[in-house]
Image 1 (cartoon, rainbow, N blue to C red):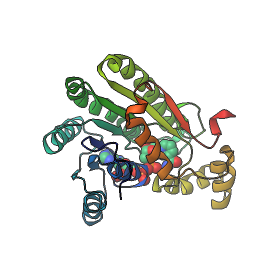
Image 2: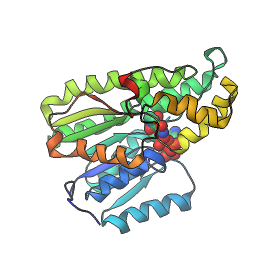
Image 3: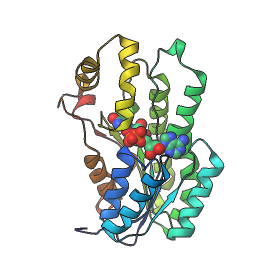
Image 4: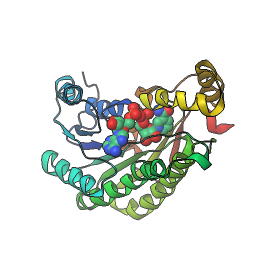
Length: 265
Ligand code: NAD
């Protein structure tokens, strides 16, 4: 059951929330009383179960949009549907993301385009659509799920690192533009979080580096994380809740690491 409910009456749109970090963020915001719209791909039955679960578990209104984050028109329609169905988009979490691992000379151009579209441009299209309503209500929270890769690079992830560094700059720019309107804009920069996105890149990393599965997990993924533990999705949800609250109103334009010390090195 909700405890403090400090977001009751607020509404949140979380992109890429049918799985992993986005789903945990949507559930964490709903646990604080926010009405939510979830988004992302997956099996219709599983998505409906998650949507209905949000309503049942937290007593909030929950909607689903199947908008494809590569399509600007669908993103604008998703924001409009959230405003129509929930009354507003007070909290926008740009979280949808994909990964592809390959040496740059073999990197398929269509994968580059998809990563830039979903991990970077989608945030622009959603922010562009949501900011007018936030300005009118003089309150807003924009949270971009960036990555440790917004701050540092790893080999074979050229498109992802470029997109996440782009999100870092976008976050700071929109923060400056909206600071006087009661809107904060921040990026959460996780290290390795155990989600399907990480699990799926293990085979490609095994191939690109000629390693076993255990070597990829221990020597590549957790090698860079001094805690030697994956970050949990619940930790990211808790940070998103904090950034959405009143006590975070002076935190804007920041890139907040939650990476077990990775980027301290
Ligand atoms: P995930 O694969 O579990 O979830 C990705 C979500 O995005 C899913 O809901 C999926 O359906 C959705 N999605 C993908 N393409 C889409 C599209 N075209 N349109 C709409 N939705 C789409 O991955 P995750 O690990 O939870 O990643 C979420 C975010 O966190 C991403 O931006 C990722 O870059 C970032 N991140 C993840 C990690 C990690 O270690 N898992 C670390 C740092 C940052």
